[in-house]
Length: 569
Image 1 (cartoon, rainbow, N blue to C red):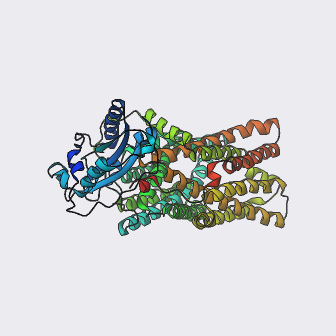
Image 2: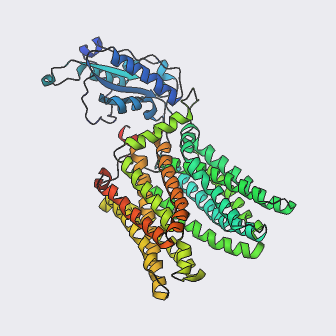
Image 3: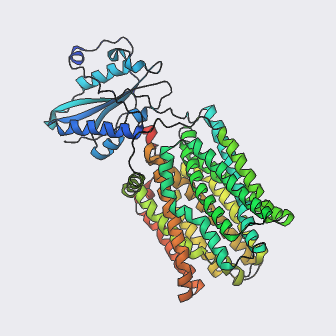
């Protein structure tokens, strides 16, 4: 097929009612494609792709496409205006995308198609769309249509969506506060009550972090298959149940280190699934152009909650002991589950038909990220940053306590300043992107993040150095949160809705995997050289990572990309 490409038009209001079809349009009136019995978007896409490939293979003419779909009230036309996968592969000339909203469900199969305003416009375009004579090619316009009812769309920006977003933020903030209590109480319980060895503590931390590496990619598929609200609710209730097992075992005298390993691993898996669901909900709840602000508000909420939870955890462990302090985490999950029940505007998937394998769907998400001109350099930069952070941060607390001699109080001051910086960076990121563009924010943000890792390497004892380290920690976390909210917004904006969760989880897997590998490499490298040399190598890798962005299309990104669902709606 000879391809002629140009930006596809958006949905154009249909012509006024009552306008008669021209004779040529009536003569060339195309029949609607056979109605698909498939209601599942994945099966529908495969069915439509088969039709499109058949049309292409049997035609010696240059084809253009009018994408047409009748949909129910409140329906999302993106599913019915399918061929998204087909269009990305073959780049056909799409003349227009047209939707007729039916007055009631089922009307699409009983009314007269030629009386619909949108269908009338489809006929005119099919008959009258000219091909420039200079091309010397023939043109045949193909109408692809479906009478399936699309998945209802979340009314992003509507009052109900704003209330749902507020409930989501409250739930996430509460659960993060409880998780901060848990992160203090669990190792304290292992050391004080079970007399755990350093090796056992390291294994406990590994069990909590392993799911981020192993479960991230499957989590993206789960969120593309199942209802987001259901995933939020089920993971919260399951996490609360797992947490309650610890104080119950302590009361019964059955608490052991293997039990703590199992709880840490379970919570890690549930946390990855829950975080993926939260990220998948944001584009559906945020209003037009407000996705970045939604990410910023979420990051700010969990930053404040994490800091408050750490302080609360310290008080609870001292007052009631680590086993009882963990009850606060269970309570936070119940609150988060209640908040999830208040989110009623998220779309519910249609009946599921036969799907590709999970491995195949994971591969689609990874390939999309690897081949996209913006996502590919972002992944490379995030991988380098993650590995460098693993090398530079593994011995950070040890280096600050032994060489800079900041003490426990000084270390707490640095952590508090870092939390304040994270909150500031998250809140300022949308404004910075508005004024300077996402490319500048991402490139300079990663550069600043890298350079602040040099402060611990040159610091010495004394109050002045302590203040400098606190300032560096504040700036470092401000840059990290600004970059994090911006890159997640870019990734979700440039990814089709059916790949959104898988694209984002691919980046999470890259970050978690590279940082884990960096932390694992830090031990042998420090043994062969020194702690200072290991941290210097991490700093060099961190400085090189932004260079990838500066030389890529990401660095030249002047405005936040328009979300794919907005471009095709």
